[in-house]
Each structure stands twice: as structure tokens, then as C-alpha cells.
Length: 277
Ligand SMILES: NC(=O)c1ccc[n+]([C@@H]2O[C@H](COP(=O)([O-])OP(=O)(O)OC[C@H]3O[C@@H](n4cnc5c(N)ncnc54)[C@H](O)[C@@H]3O)[C@@H](O)[C@H]2O)c1
Image 1 (cartoon, rainbow, N blue to C red):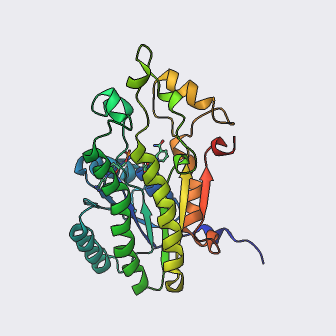
Image 2: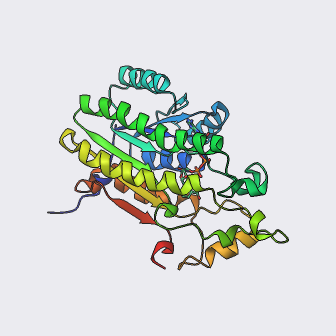
């Protein structure tokens, strides 16, 4: 069988992207547009959505790009969007569960609040609500829409920290006692590992509905982080650098298109080799 590049095309397919106003959400939307699809961006921040829409329209002038302010932890809001998209665009083929509360270590409510023994349960609950409950809500609501048109694809955005423990040494600050050192919050590891569980569960649950579900496991993206942090992190990465924001687009196009038609319940690790070292 000849391999046609059409297997990477998602011409006319509708792709819902949660956290569409964020750093990666915009890149997922670009990947969808490059492959001929229609991105539907959901984000709790109207401002972020507006900014991303402006950037996307500059490059993809004629393209259909849809965005909705939506809190994915609110089932009624997500369901209302499903109805609106099905009425306007008549289909939902792809869901990218990408939204998360990304804890900035430095503003986690005072450095030592990130530590396990101090980590506020309200923060834990808020993080779980977005990262796991939100993904569950979107999965079941948009999978229902996919069933109406014969199937679809779900991609859960996990992290290298779904596979390995955070190396807390890279977050260290000079001049702080050990018990006051900031750490990557426990909620992040639990949510990302949980998303791998949701991926396998959804893959088998929806297999007879022709809905595939896989996880993308990305490493850290360079976005102007502190020099010392970047040096310590890149020492843990065989390729010796963090990812550029555009470097997950190829993986996204592969996962959402027919190029990955025999793949479900799997994790695609794109991390510069970090988890193999
Ligand atoms: N940036 C990285 O280095 C990196 C590395 C590995 C994995 N990831 C994962 O990739 C995904 C995207 O990361 P990012 O760097 O673009 O983060 P980001 O913070 O830039 O974007 C996340 C977006 O989710 C939105 N959001 C938060 N709560 C929401 C809610 N309740 N409803 C709807 N939207 C909500 C935020 O407003 C934000 O725009 C996350 O799941 C993250 O954990 C990121």
C-alpha cells in the first residue's frame, strides 16, 4: 500500500481544544488548521481566547476559527457548547483535553505552600477539578457528539511527569532551608498520571463507537524560564534542551488524523529523551 500524505489530512473535521487560549492550545489550533481542520477553542479566559484568535486570524485569514468562553469544570456550560457546535458545524470529530492549572512554582501562595505537607487542599481540589474532572466531563459530552457522526479521536495532554517523579532539585532556590524549598506540586503528577488512566479507560470504553483515545506526553517547553532552572532541567534531557512551542504540532497532527488509525490507549512520548535517561 502506498503511503499518501492524505492520511495526515483532517480536512473539514471539527476539533475542540480545551485551554485553547494557552501556550500550547494555540499551537494545537495551528496544527489543526495546518491539517485542514476547524479548531473550536474553549477557555475560561476570554482575554486569552481573544489574543489567540487575533494571532490565528493573522496567519489563517480565510479559516473558520471558533472560540467559546467556557469553564470545563461546569458540565452545563460544556453541554451547551456541544449543542451549539453540533447545530452550527454539524459535527465534532476531535477533542484535545489540554486545559490545566499550571502551577507557577514562584507564585504558589508562598514558596513552602507547594510542599506536600503544606499543599492546600483547596488548591489540590481546584487543580483536580480542571485537570481531571474537566477532562472527564469533556470526554463524555464530546464523545456523545462523536457517536452521532460515526466516531472520532480524543487526545489527552499529559506530561513527562506522568511517567517519572519530578526531580525536585531543579526547583531549588538559594538561601532557603530544605524544608522551605519549593517543589513541583503533587497535584500535577497525580493529574498527569490520572490522564493516562483516563486515556486507557476511554480507549477501551469507546472502542466499539469508533472513537480512539491516546495521550501525548510532552516534555517542558522553553518559555523564558529562569536561567538556572533551565540549566538544571536541560541537564536531565539527553537532547540537552527544552522543547520549542511548535515541536508538538507533528505529534498532534499524527494523533488526530488517520495516520494513527491503528493506535488507541497509547502514550506518545515527545520529551527530548528525558524519560529514557
Ligand atoms: N508548557 C509546558 O512546558 C508543558 C509541558 C508538559 C505538559 N504541558 C501540559 O500542556 C497543557 C497546556 O499547557 P500550557 O503550557 O499551554 O498551559 P497554559 O497555562 O498556557 O494554558 C492552559 C489554559 O487552560 C485554561 N484553563 C484553566 N482552567 C480552565 C477551565 N476550568 N476551563 C477552561 N479552560 C481553563 C487557562 O485559562 C489557560 O489558557 C497542560 O495540560 C499542561 O499541563 C505543558
